[in-house]
Image 1 (cartoon, one colour):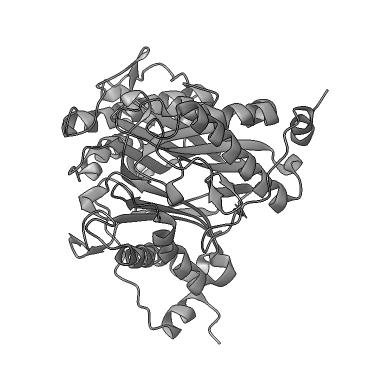
Image 2 (cartoon, helix red, strand yellow; image 1 turned 45 degrees about the vertical axis):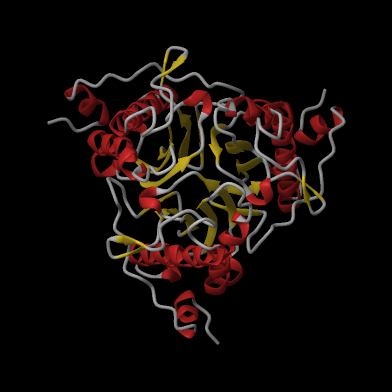
Length: 154
Length: 154
Length: 154
C-alpha cells in the first residue's frame, strides 16, 4: 500500500518532469517561516510552451485541465529539487490557478480541478489545499494556464 | 460596547451565511504556520451565483461592492466553522480581490472597499489588512467578484 | 563595497519615493508569523497614476517594465516606513506581478523582470524571490502594472 507521495506517484506510473527553469530574475522555490512558495508554473516542454492559446477558443477545456495537472507536476519537481524529497512536504496549503480565458467561458473551476485532483491523489487529505481560481486576460508566452503552490515544509 | 468580532456582527444585525461548499477538490480553509488561508469566495445563494456578469456592463459597481462584502461574510463563516469561533482570528493579514471587468472600467479599488470596509467594521484595526485588487477577464460560474482572505490564527 | 540594501540603493543613486497611501480601507504593510505582506502597488506620482493604459496598446512594454521597478521602490518605501529600516528584511519571499494587457501580448514575464531585477540589485541573492506573473483585464485607476511583495522580516 503506497503511503508516501513518491510511492503514490510511482504506483500510478507518474514521473516528474525536470525541475523548471525560471524565465527571469527569480527563484523556482523560496522557503520561509516553515512554508515554501513555488513560482507560478506554465507548462513547458524544453523551451516551448505546450498548447499555447486561450482556453475555449484555441485550447479545449479538458486539455487545459490536463495542463493544470502537468503544471503541478512541474511544481512538485521544483519542490523535490529544493527540499531533497517530496516527503518533506507536510501539507499543501494553497493553490492559485490562473486560466487565460475567452469571453463567455465560465468554467475556470473545472479546469483548476486538474491541479487539485492530482494533489489529492499524491498527498491524500494532506493535499487538500485552499484554492483561488480566476480567469485572466493573458499569460506569459501565451500559456493557457498557470499554477502556483504554497506548501508547509518545516 | 461590542468588543469581539461576534459582538460587533450581532450589534449590527449581521448574520453569517452557511459555511461555503468548495466547488471542486479543495478545502474552504487551510491552517499552517499560525496562519489560515480561506479559499477564493464567489457569492452564492444555495447552488446559484448571485448577480452573474461583468462589472459595469451587467453588474453595477455598487452591487459588486456589496457582493465583496458578502464574499467576506462567507469567508468569515468558513473561518468560524474551521476555528470554532471568530475570536480565534488575531488579525486579518491579506485580502485578495478579483473583479470581473468590462473594458474601460477602472474603479476596482472602490468595489474592493466593500470587502475591506466590512473587515474594519467587524475586527476594528485588527481588520485592516494588506490588499491586492485586480480586474480579471472572468471568474468561475460568471461571478462578478471573488475574494480571498489570509488571517493570523495561532 | 556596499553590503546592505540601503547602501546598495545609495551606491546606485536610487532614492525611495514617499511611502504609499492606501486607496481604501486597508494597510500598506501587515506583519504576521515573521513575514510582512505589502499591498499591491500601482505607480503614482502624488494623486496621479503614472502612464495609465494597457501594456502594448497604450503603454510600451519597456515603459511597463520600468513601472514594475518603480512599484517595487514604492513597496520598499512602505517596508522601510513599517519596519524602520530595509535591513530588517531578511529576504524577499514572493513577488506577484499583474500586467494589464491588450489581446495578443504575451511578454508579461519580460515586464515583470523590471520588478525582480531591482530586487536582485538591492538585496543580492536574498532578493531572488518566487514569482507569479499574469496578464489582467484591468487595474485600479487604469494603471498598467501592479506589484505585490511578501518578505521575511522576523
